[in-house]
Image (cartoon, rainbow, N blue to C red; front, side):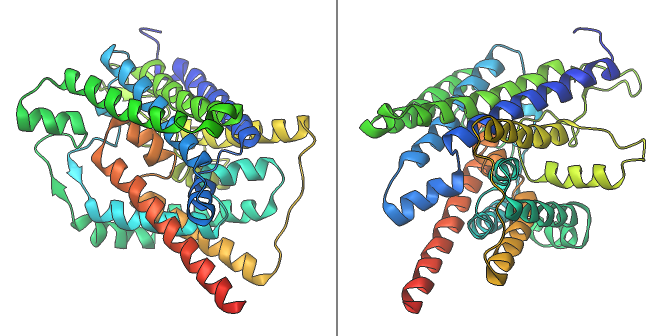
Length: 372
């Protein structure tokens, strides 16, 4: 599509995002892909099946994205993740609070969308509060705290924060060679860990969920970073990535896009508001999950148990909205999409999310044991 204008490319970008997300929503529903569930299974039962599936998704995304980058199809440095500004406190606090929130809200942002597609009204409430809190953190009162406090604790690195750039700067090795080494070592280690388990090897859904999720992220980079890339926008004479909210190359993330979806719905008649890559991806996950649920007759309406259940989900959604924006992503946006760029902040956020979720689960177990 060399020479195409942004207006001509827009349908391919939003359509591609929707189709990829549709596949993710359907497969996520079928395989019960759930990052919160992965931590819960590990912490509460010592079962690592879904954690291995999550790690497999990261590995596939890492290897696939690195291959596209090395082939010159995309440039991962043009995404938000490998920026030289290393906001370590934002990654830790935001990631930890997101982990707490996804535990209270019965799932992360992507799982919330999958549950909505399957008829879960609790997740619809989580969606609304997640989106509102995310928007308040992007542009509202919570944003003042994010920028004025958390982002002040940052280090400006001499190069991008992705591991190949950092190591290349320190030891002088070629960045391309280091990308290959890190992708093969980290990706290979995660794949080996996943398939070291006999149950994982014998359960097709684990492989299906992990591989498809990873490939969807790779496909997202291709759609946004290649199909949607304009070397020189005729209106600005600058490089542009069509229909992205960040103005940079994007793949899948499910915090900020939920906020932008609410904004789009509320300002529907404002012609300056358009369907972006993120909005289309959020809609695609819901549609894909709904299609699978209806086709398999597993669609079920589900509501809140009581007032406490309602409160926990409201708090959970709000914490995910704040934490996800603060940490620049969620269990998909940072822990898979961001991780595929080998950004140090993404890896730190992944660890913080798991820590926040695990700590919350331990606290919940302690409360239940005391009541018993």
